[in-house]
Length: 131
Image (cartoon, rainbow, N blue to C red; front, side, top):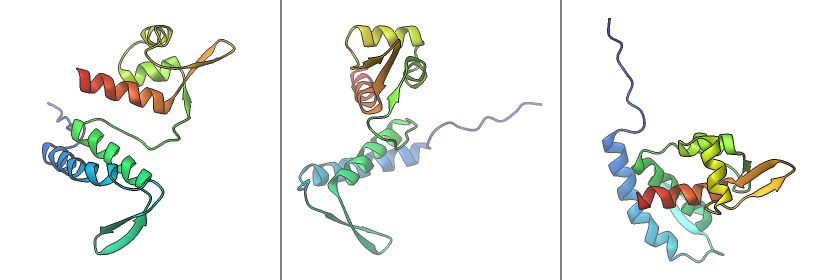
């Protein structure tokens, strides 16, 4: 008996809607005063939201549009080469080479290399948009 496979990631319809929403929000967020608040209405409820939070929403929408799984985590969370490899779809050895070449900024504590999650996300986005 053949097993049915669940589709991975968001549907095409959801990806398109996320891309449209990101494209419409991006110029509004980019033009906002970072020290101010933005009024956002969702389901009839208006909230005052920092532009930084709206920027995170735009990033999440970009990820959804690209079919990329994403999470919200502290930007300074340190990840090692095993996690980097898993996130980029490469081996930990290749992740170490990326660090050694300076492609991804890192710090070393003892023998452990750590990359800030924000730096890894920036590298991943650059890699995704370039290829």
